[in-house]
Image: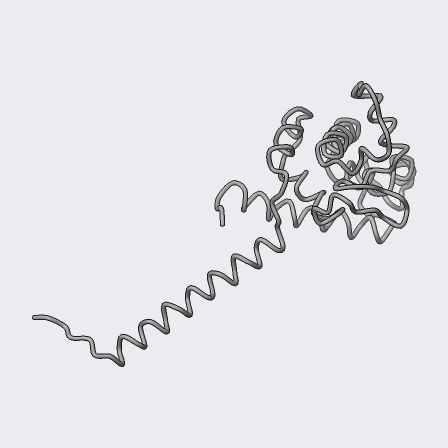
Amino acid sequence: MFYVINGKKIIKILKIVIFFILIIFICKSMINYIFPIQYEEIIEKYAKKYNIEKELVFAVINAESRFDKNATSNKGAIGLMQIMPETGQWLSEKIKLDYFSEEMLYTPETNIQLGCYYLGYLLEKFEDETLALCAYNAGTTNVYRWLDNDDYSLDGNIHTIPFKETDKYVKKIKVLKKGYIILLNNIRI
């Protein structure tokens, strides 16, 4: 026996197929908007070199600049990973760059290299991702101050981040990192 499909059923099936294609396209667009993937080779290169998770680097860049290589903050931080020129100078000396200028922070390769080195340095220094992210956002001096204050820390761990901006920043990075872990390791859209 053969099942005969009339014209109305074909149109109904086509509408359903088109609907699902649109849903998939919209979901893909939303995921790519929320979790953009750019500069992947550079990020992988320096994340590996400085022993940090590439998903963390993607999350930091997403939070700091939304992958805008020309981003400049109102405080003067520059580029993808929002590095202050003075910090960039210090970092370039640490990794023994032959030459450094503020303009180099707009170059994705240099910015990611310096940002990854700095993030790796902070992770090693604090031995804790939350503390390293706090230091990346608010500075190491503030983190040490918080760790010395019983109102904010207990047994060397921060239980309260006193700067609302930094608290929000750390939470955002952690959510973005989880998203990048799923996206980069399980599915590619």
